[in-house]
Image 1 (tube, helix red, strand yellow):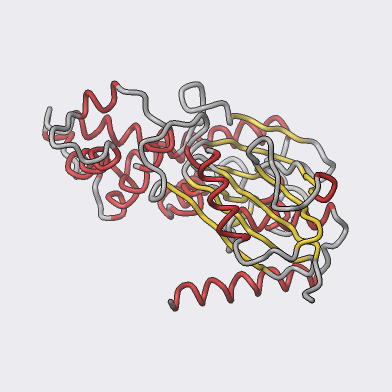
Image 2 (tube, one colour):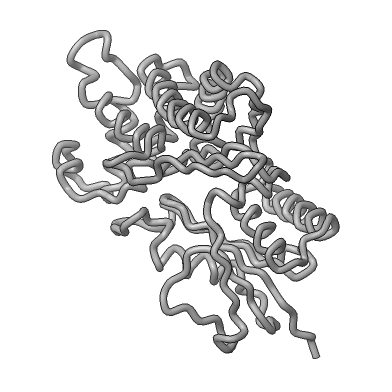
Length: 329
C-alpha cells in the first residue's frame, strides 16, 4: 500500500497564464501544470484569462494528474469557488492567502526590498528593514497598471494604426500586430482592426502583444524600442513614489523583478534599473532564476513551519531537474 502524504499546491494565476505546482512536504516537485493563451481562445474573463476557472482547473488537473495518495493539501493562490479536491474532506484542504508581493521576496531570500511586478498588470511594493510597507498601482489596465504588458500591447496597436501616416511613424509593428490580432479573433476571412478594437477584448489578449513589441524592439525597430522604454520609465516613476514614501533612497535594497514583462524583456528591465538607480543608487537589481509560483511554495512552506535549507534545496534542485528533462524532450 502506498502511504498517503501531505502536499502543497501553489497556483499562480496571472492575466495571461496560470501555473500550478504540486510539491511534497519535503520539497520535491511532484507535478507541474500550465495554461496560457495557446490553450484559451475566444473567452473573456475579468482580470485576464489566466484567472479564469477553465485555466485554473486545467492547470491544477495537469499538476496533480499522477498523484492520488494525498492525505492533506495546503493550497495557495486563486481558486474556483467552491473548491474541492478528489475525495479529500474540507478539513483536509488548508488554504493560505499569499499575495503576489510576498513570493518574490522569499524567492530572492530577503525580508525587505522593492518588488516590481510588470506582467499583464503592474504594481510596485516596498518593505523597509523595519517593516514599513507601501503598495502603489495594481488598479487595472484603464485606471492604472503603468508600465504593464497591457500598456505596451495597446501602445503597439496604436503605433501600428498610424504607421502609414508619416515616414517618422514607420514600424514593423504595422505588419505583425494586425496578424496577431487576426489570430486572436480566430483568423476570419474578413478582418478589420477597427472592428477588432471596437469589440470587448480580454486584457490578456492585449497584454500578449507586448511580446511582439519587445521582439521588434530587440530587432532594432525604433518605435517598438520607444514603447518598451517608455513603459519602463512609467513603472520606474511608480518605484520612485514608493521609495519616497518609505524613505529608502539612501539605503541598499534589492529591486526584485516579477511578472512576464519585467523578467522577460532585457530592454525593459535594463532601462528600468537605469532609471531607478538615478534616485536610489544603492539598490541591487535582482532577476529571479525561478518562476513566481516557486516563491508561493516557499512562502507557504514557511507558514507551515517546514521551510528549512533542505526543503529549499530540494525544491530548487527538483525544479531544475524537471526543467532540464522537459527541455530535453
